[in-house]
Image (tube, rainbow, N blue to C red; front, side, top):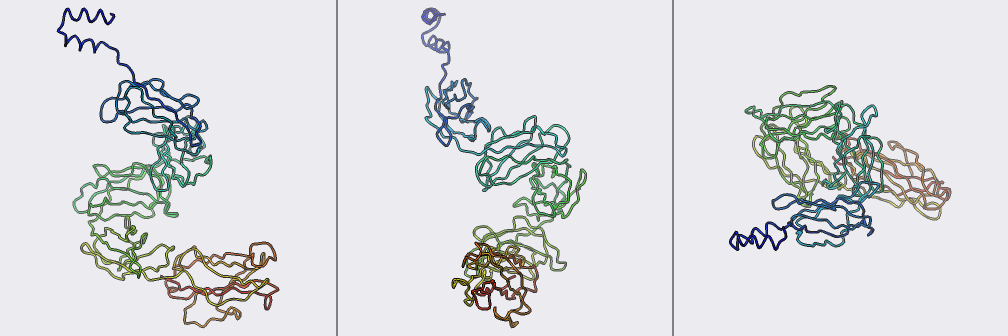
Length: 523
């Protein structure tokens, strides 16, 4: 009916106010528009971007039409009704686009709303294929990515297709990529995890998902046999100590958990929830070759051992590892979250007992470890620690010059010379290019008399190394010599002495010599 006819007939039958309301209800709901342009990091329009709107602050999602960008990245979306929405931009997957997902919150759409030009985050194409142990494709594997900080990356098109292929746009840098195989239909396969640094479009080798085995257990309190809820269970390969990706690995309201793992030998760690008053537990070197129920694991009550770790100068030390061993047996005690934070603080929960407490700083800081030989824990206790100095190295002497009057120089990399540091490395620079050199070193008690660099004899060890650089060029030669420090407590306090002698016809006796490196082996 034409509007004029509706109004005339309405006034004959209804009061004026009711007639207005009826007339308003009879009008069509006019759509709003949301427009703009989406471009990539180079300013080029991105075609085929899907645009979704989600209601914020309650209400239903709107009705949309023309909700995609054209070939130049422009869009004009019809939106019914007006409101405040979250706007999501979903670019097509690689190779069509390497732009990443973007969302805008609390966008008010009323009338004709123009967002202007929006630049989508730049990503890098990461692709590959998920297969089972026989090479058959796996459809439905879901990808999750975390960046170097551990933050989850918003992904779209993150599920493998019917042929097992996937292609996502991911940020540059160090990434952790998890392949969750739980949605796969068919025989059970184990989830997988990969780590990589993404700097250019990358196709991964086939991600092989081996047959999956269910690993499960109940976790309860030792004191009253009640369920421990929300406990995180982590599984580590016993040999490599690499953590497996085990989604859905926390205990439920009954204290039960189950997850899927491949066959192997694992350290299974039950990390008690913070504030539960329970000590954590580890089942070491458990062999899993079939579906495995670990029974009921009982977590003992525990006490909080906490403190602050500083250097001798009173500077708090981050990343210091705290280890406990039972004094009577020497057995290691599994601790959850046992490193100091940025303020040098630590807090662990342990059962009652008498322990040796070891404080081990990272090898990258010039500090030695510290130890409390016997600590009784039968209540919450504060135990601070001070780490002694442990310099990387010092040098003495001037050495013997070679061709061009240039004297080789010795140094060390890889951190401090502490017990167990496998990265400690001797280096020589400024030798004759391409020449052979002999590195001499010893790790003997400082009280032992040792020869000078030009009077090498026992108990020195010697090894031959080849210098880099153009042959015969003065000062162009360099070499590294790996010298891991053994985990041998009898070496603590010993003096490392080392130097290089380089074959050089221009030097005295045909050998130039570096200055001498000295370093005290620290616990």
